[in-house]
Image (cartoon, rainbow, N blue to C red; front, side, top):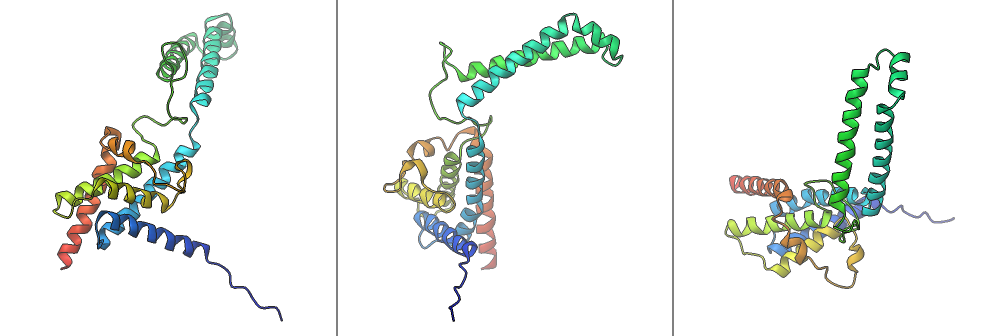
Length: 232
């Protein structure tokens, strides 16, 4: 009789791996690490994962530039059509498409065309070439996942220092960020055989686009620490 093979609980395995990585992220900052710090880092690890998913779906600079150019061409073509003989024929066949409506539409198309031009200028240098830098684009007032990860750890470190715990060293902060990152994501382009370079991302942790995230990290840490003190 053939023996049965027990199924592997992949979900539980991943959950354990995630929990272990978070515990190590917390211990890199403060050892022994309190549960409230572990819990907050665990909660915010999903912010890193969520932003990484958004980053992966984002257009590359080349793709966005091509899309903007195409939209400009189509907008200009429709604008010119609205200014030509077509406008009068449309108004005659469809009473709701009055000349006033079409005039306003032409003005809106002109504004949209200009806005596309402004967008394109932000992506190119003086010679009209795409600016160098990261390959993907991101929305205004947002930062890629690695910046989010560094900001979470930077705020946790600042909170510990402010509340008279041992101030984490830079290397410890980098270790903590690595554990937080790998709790859900692979090292990826950094390479798996060396410590990822976090310096640039930590230097950008004070960027205004990360302010709301850092405030929320601070707030959650204060709540969890306060709850612990109250229970005692």
